[in-house]
Length: 357
Image (cartoon, rainbow, N blue to C red; front, top):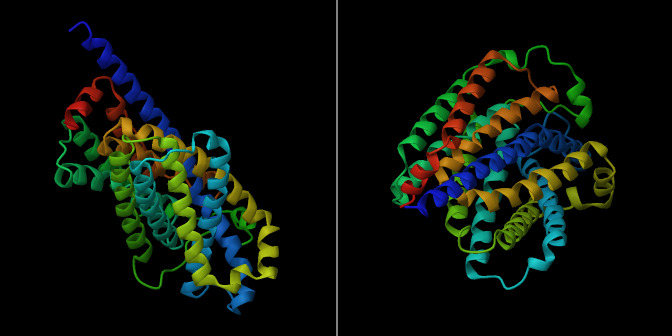
């Protein structure tokens, strides 16, 4: 018994550190929601002449090409930078690291592509809120697919987080009333959501993205404990970059990769600053930390922490003037914060250990 207390104390400390680190990751991802809209809007502005299609939109293939090309370039930069920073550790890959990187990267790429398509038709905060539905999918997958018990405190945190998501998803017209036009000048075009061709298309795509992100979380939980997170992360980044770049090239063709279009895109500051900042902070830094620290928590607990992402998405959306902070978003955010505090409170790590048995 004398050796048990220090062990439990160390486990609790690691779990609380994991919660704090994943919360920081959510801040970096929250930044990406409005900024990604700026980048894609700027990229599409350069494609209109190439396809002889005036605003308000591009043909579906070119819109998907713009989205996947941005993601492909973003993760190509992230892959190169991450390799430079970790090249001394990039050797002797195990099967778990390769398979894990491919599985996590494939699910992540698919989720990002679906999510960014939905982001065109929803507010950044609504997109983030629906993405947070993974907080429901993950504990269900953990309990019924992987047959791993979910502790009572975690279930309570999931219920509280779900209540916060419901509040945040309520009609919130005040979020877009009388917005200044400064946000349009940042991107060279309007980052505001467009009318979808089908009802609730943005919400449907974003919910599908949440399911794919749940698959990513479960794959990371499975493979992340079986090898080096550094090598798994590089394979993940490279897989994401390859899939997105190939899809963009197939759908966009010469409309994106022609010399005039490339020259215009790569000299446009409204496109470059989101590309570089998201590559460094929301990709390299955030994904390295996620892959290193998420395995210290159960998938259900990690998803509760990931519900902080919409809070930060809202704060950055307000900062970039793409929406206003309202009582509804503040209340929903406070409820989600309470759920995260439940996961991080002392003693919850012992329930976590029990839930993983």
